Image (tube, rainbow, N blue to C red):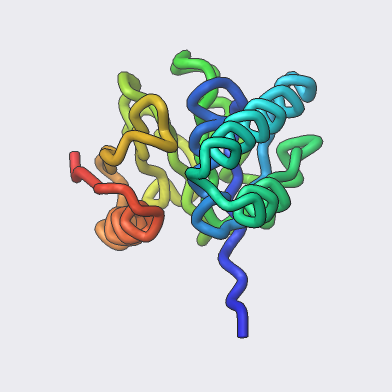
Length: 183
């Protein structure tokens, strides 16, 4: 009997977004990838495909596992497609105005139980969560580059982030084979 893991959405398909999407898909999650430039999502998935093919050719990964991972990656045509995600990881531009606007949209689109997290390394989670519905579900998950290789992931809370959300994120990161570091 197989258990279907919850859908993860990644916003941003640059180096970090693609790496985070690969990590979640490798752990068995269906992953939606959204970017304001749809062609960037195609490039990100192609880059993941190439990295996996290299690992297969070196005997580091079974071809079946690579194929299964790739089958779990899908482009999202617009933000509304992310409504079914239980975890949304933003890895977009490091601009506070962009992040705040994006999180306001996500708070309207996603279920109140969906966790909304940012990969930011420098912007306050409290500032990102300010003024949105259910700010207790907003946190930071800061992956290090390259995300599929680096083990540490910072779990960052804002002033409104609930302890339950932090615990869920630490568990998820551990389930993904990473080492959560509470910040």
